[in-house]
Image: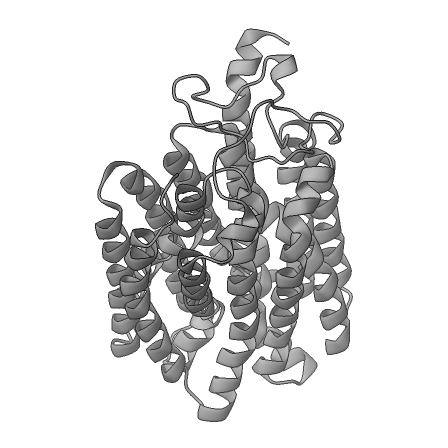
Amino acid sequence: MSSRWSAARPWLVFVGCCVLSLVGFGMVINTPGLYYAVLSHDLGVTRAQVALATTIMNGVGALTMLVAGRVMRRVDSRLLISGCVVVCSVVFFLGSYFTSLWQFYVAFVVLGVAYVIPVSLAPSVLLSNWFEEKVGMVMGIALGLSGIGGTIFNPIVSSWISDFGWRTSYRLTALVLSVCILPFSLLVLKFLPDASRGEYAYGHGRKATPAPVAASAGQTDSGTAAATTGDLEGMSAHDAYRTLTFVLLAVISVLLQFTSGLVQHVSGYEQTRGLSLTQGALVVSGIMLGAALGKASIGMALDRFKVELVLAAYSLVGLAGWLLMMLIASPGPATVFGFLAGLGQGVVLVAVPWLVRRCFGPRDYAEIFSGVQVAGTMALALSATVHGAVFDMAGTYLPSLLSAVVFFAIAALGMPAAYRLRPKKK
């Protein structure tokens, strides 16, 4: 393998992770709420019943997360990620032919198993493996593109639904997922650098901390043999689970992911206040754009500035955005306030994985991060149905907006505390 190719490999992995976040997260996670109203009408069911499909998907995803970290270390990640993407595409394609609600529930069970590794886990794990330096920057940019994906695909998918119907929109979603992701997942997204082939993480040798997140049975091209040598620094997953920092991060993940689930209902919320579907989708796009910039900027800020201040600042901005969205109902300002709420989302997808690596080291990163994600993903699963049920019972989303304000206030206090209480290096 040429030295030029080896030097470029970490950045190719970075580009591949960007595509996973942009297209995978942008379409699989950020657009289901756009279908709630039309499916509710066509199937003759409540929004809570439709949203239950998303709850099922995320609930199954949380269970999948329990084993996803171990699976990634034992199966060639290129085949694993590609297989999961194919399954997701097939689910959306078949979904375009569904006529009953139970069919969506069954399909979203399968989707819940398939989306976790490529969308929720792979970007942060692969970037942690391939970068010893600039971890915050590459995580921030790559994970921030999930928000850009939402910004791009929310108006696109809403126009597909309005112009062609939800069935055609599902088919187009399947096509976009396959065409955009598979070339990268098949050719680029390798789990670990392989020193025997001259592959090293970016920054290797410039500082003492080893880069790859691996165990004694890491992957090479075949996914079966160890790719690195030497012991990895950091805390074992068993010990990390018993620390107060882990507990706090898990609680913060629960609160903020529960709030994230409300994003799926923002379009419907704005429609209840007199906005059109397109205007409501624009507010969601404001959230996604804010999330993209928030995730990208918080990663770089965490690498450069006082960690506690960065965490508190972004949490407070998110709190302000949700509060103002609750108080003011006008298309332009609502989009701006959605942007602020989105900025605060940076603490969910970037700060949490960054803190896990910073507090516990690379040794068992995949397992520890999966543990934190399990709690958050379960909260996200429940939130879609809970917020829908709140609307069905109260006729308004205001109680859900109020919960978002409270939860971001708690996060503003809890995130810095978790970092200050991190285990000391021995």
